[in-house]
Image (cartoon, rainbow, N blue to C red; front, side, top):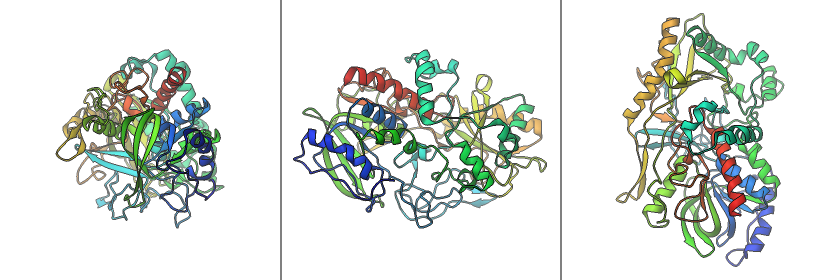
Length: 539
């Protein structure tokens, strides 16, 4: 995608008007294009930016697109890579069952969600590299986050789930339910390209035998089994099944990126943003400071190489800054900026209300007459809903090992009431998360409301070989970090940070800990709502 040339600005003497006039050409030439040097970028020291967006995930992508469509010039800063150039194997992304240097963010050993299989450890040594998946250890929990242009859209399962309307007031009580479900959820789903699997094809598809087994077991125990939308291209998957196109979901690609059929943000929101000619993106750039300055804010940015080393430190000016680095990235940055006096006006709610969406994983060992299939699509299509009675929604997840396992695997989202808090440790100069491992117990109890009954009905047992020796529950992780700069608390009701005009939060940090389903559609819809109001009133 794009040219291999690198567009730069003229440096500190560049006027705002000239900078704005040139950022339109950056996107076509360099920002999402294949770089000759992995650390090449469009953002130069002394640049002046109308709107700076920190992060290129769901909230940031919505923000950039809608600002650009309103005639505002935008520059996006992304800590991860552009992920547009193939490796030596001819593919951009590594396969889930064969992690390599591309897989993990600045680790020398993989830290996979399933650490064991059939008694064997799965993790292995890898070269340190700015890989696509960050496994960040914080306060007794591993938080998985996407690193790259497109953020979490690069590494999630693509389940585009809108929470049930009746549950929404408990998630964001200050937000108008009718507006969200009549305007912003439809807008988000449409732009993301969310669609539901062809139910007729589902019944015969070899790659969804595991999901049909999950449906059978759920139904026999009296649970509601439901199809959920996805952002995968179903026509492409059908062609994968016939061998007409290179396999992607049917090759197990998901955890470390998907090479073909998944409609990630670079194919949806960011593609539309590029088309406006008003959006530039600097990959491998990390914001370290935001401080008030004449006409806006002075922003310090570190430029990284693929070893994680800082190649350059730059200072730029931005009239307005949109924090969209994800729940963890945004929260950690804001907490540090408040504690160190860079943004002293931020209120005491910054850092509060963090949660892990009640994530807990488990596997079940089925009978020999219930094979789940050696070929499994890595894209989940369905879930088991027991939220009202038991506080749990379980994604019927794949286990794409390439062999028959007779195993059913699940990622549960539960109504865990516990909330963590980000705090500043002055002695270490780091932001820490106050979270306790024991706080996962409510999630386990709620997940049991589904799986204890299924095991009793089917005469089956839990798998104990997936998360360590004789360990049933994957209660050490989350894929869905939420909160830390909660809407209408740390911000006003549209994401404007209290205490400093022209600063906004636009990502999952706004959502207090839980949405009852996979969160990215809600993050997207909330960003659509907020940026519409901000454009109307602030620009």
